[in-house]
Length: 37
Image 1 (cartoon, rainbow, N blue to C red):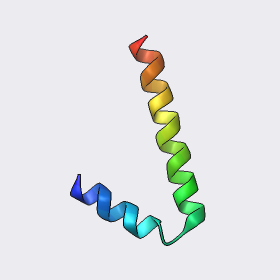
Image 2: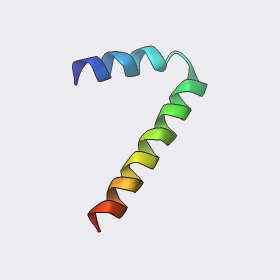
Image 3: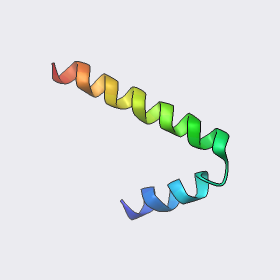
Image 4: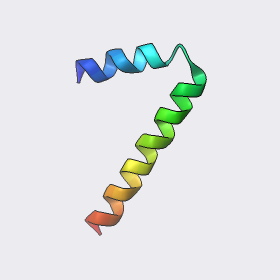
């Protein structure tokens, strides 16, 4: 979890990478929601 936080801080220096990461995580959660239903 700490590693994830440090990686997020590093990515925050690049807004484009941050947006890409955000969409990846959102897609991951949407897939998890579908599999849970």
